[in-house]
Amino acid sequence: MTQVQECVEIINQHVKGFKPKIGLILGSGLGQFCDNINIKSTLNFTSLPGFPVAGVGGHAGKLLFGEVQGTSVVVMQGRAHYYEHGKADIMAVAIEVLNAIGCQSLVLTNAAGSTLEKASPGSVMLITDHINMTGVSPLFGADGNERFVNMVNAYDPKLSNDMRIAAKANNINLFEGVYAWFSGPQFETPAEIRAVKMLGADAVGMSTVPEVILARHQGIQLCALSVITNYAAGMSESDISHEQTIAFASKAADTVEKLLNSYLKNQ
Ligand code: HPA
Image (cartoon, rainbow, N blue to C red):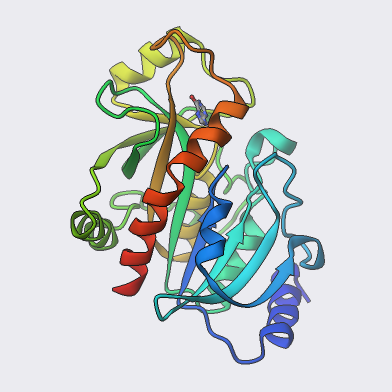
């Protein structure tokens, strides 16, 4: 049996007939959204073979099953990052499992730095496309023609539009832009930020892109949000730190909660 099959069996025994419609992955500092879920059951990543052991502050490492606004969801509270182990496919089993247990779509969230003056810390950005600055892929070593994944409209236009509608309904100023994935764990240099700004990046971060590639490889549709926790390196006087990331992500948590509640209600 593969790890994915093992996980599916464990989950099926645990949740007994509960079918999640939407999978959510919560980024750094966004765990507060879980208070909002009518939780039916919880599994630790440690009891799911192949799931990442989430190690970064602000990441809990739990899979929650429940309902939000009447929509059945499975929530990954915490994720693993490429920089933790140098494995770009660290989320592969988790994404395959979300697909195998029936998720029709995913919502991915992350904390990010903004390269746009207008998108200040505390604001939220809909990711419309990405730039992979790492040169690695979670599909290295995959076989079959499916590995040549089409990345046009990877961020699903219909789901992204649903997010815009949710923002409008709640008077949320939802920014939009291109997310550049850096490996981390060091933050970027000011020169790197100037470079990606010229390439068209509006936000920078250390996550999400591997999951987008893995999900598209699985044929899962998705949309994604960045919570802006800081101006990117060299853009402001204040130092960038992980502590600041967590603090500002928590500040934006109310906005994210409203946005996701409204989005999920209409899925
Ligand atoms: N860079 C990379 N990752 C981040 C940042 C940043 O400025 N802020 C939050 N995550």
